[in-house]
Image 1 (cartoon, helix red, strand yellow):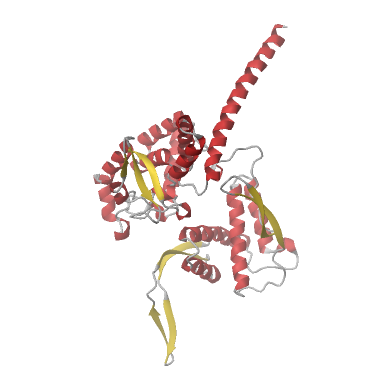
Image 2 (cartoon, rainbow, N blue to C red):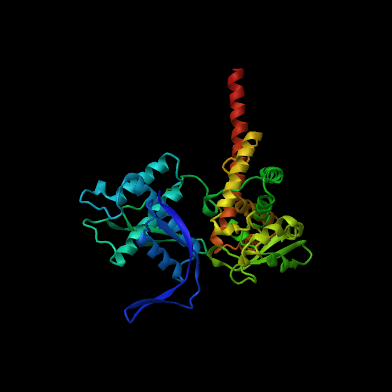
Length: 421
């Protein structure tokens, strides 16, 4: 089966001097953990690896984005090997072309519940982007047309909540990520959990998960930080926390502008709130024997990270696989104990829970405009349209609860009348 390997790449200049090939290392910054794909026979997929290098070397691409795209291409490579299909196979019959067949396989996996609709769409899009790049570099000359171009209208909401339609180029191979009709979506399509469910999840983590996962969940629920930011927190981030006067909370500086920098989505810099009691417990953990032992095994560039695996590796270096494995184990424990709050729960729901509860409290003590700005800043939202979704969610939930109560009362009264009759 095809596999993915990561290397530390250093740029070199190749020259032929007096008939001898010589390589001179350039002074450019090395690329750490550059993802490369190798076939089952250990030969490299040269075209993908060249594309990966070009994307990683570009200042327009984040390395995490490159890792995500290459992981989708790895799945494509495994499918090609399993089906004994060549990646350059584009015969005249459309149904036999490699991309058309792969698209059908993805849709079948989605319909069977093996792949999430969003993953299905992203995987096909990544593969198409790779082929478009190969066409632009004349690395492929298919005998038949690979796809048909088309123009698609996409609705875009600006920071004031107004919508407009933007035309973008697409192909007939793209797989739309259809939203569920009637479902109210918050950030990235996730929903919050209740306060009682939050308490149950944290209690279960305290008793049956690692100390690291229990603390990560607490940080997620009480700061709204994404997992990528939590796993990139430094000990110095905690030491540099500033006090919010008279509130009992502190602020953590995150983003590329923070010192030390902490990874955030869209590279947004700002400050997030954290309860002082939670901060003190995390600081205590940072100087505990358990963490110091892990720090001793870590590479020099990772030793200041707050969270390290037992082998001293960074959690943020494996696309959150270590955290996902722990969450999977915790779900199994929950099922055995008959605790159902972890059913359908994944880490990003901690952020949705934090933002919802913060907005609920803010609306009680602030005007709507101030509440929106407060939650927007606390969650590092890119625009106010994202923050306003939480107001709409709270209003919709309350209205639905009242309507359900009214309906139940009326229906039960009607039902009792029918029974008595």
